[in-house]
Image (cartoon, rainbow, N blue to C red; front, top):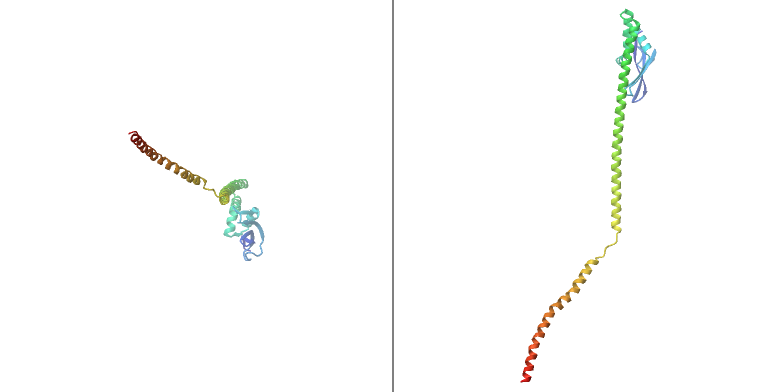
Length: 214
């Protein structure tokens, strides 16, 4: 019987979730399977993969052929490497201890890379969240300032509309002063004329007195 290691779709529409299964190559894609050996969730970043390493390697030993996507998953989790190392042990190219050590070293390096990627993603998300929060604060501050200015303008307009009209008293007083000063100037101008009349009358009186004495 030909066996394939492939993905079987589950989950909701738009958010697929897959099982990694070993199934008869003749069965339908989402039909019966021989064994579920893992899960694959592409909705997270990075994708979440769970795999029963020993079962996957055993199926590879039995001749199961993985599909392209399943092969990438098996490689990502180290199943292909373990299958290769086990082949080297069977051929006597290396001992089981050496194979286990190589696999452990690879696993540690892989875990470090995955953790570093997660940390970078978390930092990027935190930075993006901080920038968005700062931008939102600036927008809110501008909105509050604009509202305060609009309220101040409204209050000023209401105060100006309700303020009493101011009487033009200074102009009236100035007009009164002009009227008052006008007769004084006239009187001042008439004074020299009166003095001239008095001076003319004095010589005439003296002439009359002289004629009377003669």
